[in-house]
Image (cartoon, rainbow, N blue to C red; front, side, top):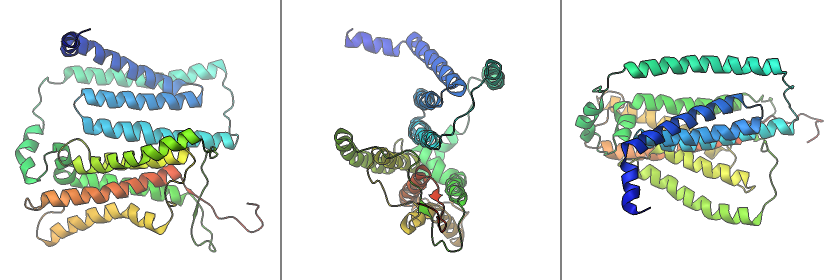
Length: 337
């Protein structure tokens, strides 16, 4: 097929509609198979595929920032956490009792019926929406120059609705604290130790080690690039943090030492640095007689870029801690290691 014919096919409304329809069907089918699969490993793999398909759907909707976050967090890191949990269950020989045919059918109906009803209601609402709604796009474009950044998503997240972003950062930090809070701490215990990986560490394979050692620096460079380009193009702190945490997960899966223990003091300080920097910036604005987190136009660009750098490192530390899992409880006296 010639280049002209391929470009004509790519721009054809019929081809675009067919592709979008096929993508929608694949997303629905993958989601259904993931929640109804009787094999846990197959369900996890389908969930990862579901996340990748969602990332492609966000690209089709013109939201590359959300697509990057979905691919890195929704498919990548969440898939790693599911695989770690599955390995932990298999290592402890925790097996679900076999289902009868009646129980299997009941579970499928219990899962499927609410999904079908909710999908039908959402379709009805979508069909009744006005085709053209003004929204806040015009308002963002008119005031975007006050932020100093040319990426409207970054302007909204770190200036126009920065309070919501602050709460999202705090929620992630609270998730790490809750994970660590699940482990009891004895009075004689001076600090939690990181538990071993849920899945047994695989033996090092020369080809895998060679590949990971060359891919990890490139991925870290991509993370830095996503942070820097976030002020003018799709990217930012959340996407950069997800890529860095994915590097840690890759190193961990390959059996290589990935990072300092998440319970080490530098990592703990790094985890809280994002929330502290965000709140400090807001308090500085209050001290200057402005509204909380209301950035002055003259220094907005520098404050946004520097805050995104701190957030990227802090969010990456939080995600790494979640991937590493809760620290192992202290060993009691007389307990075998």
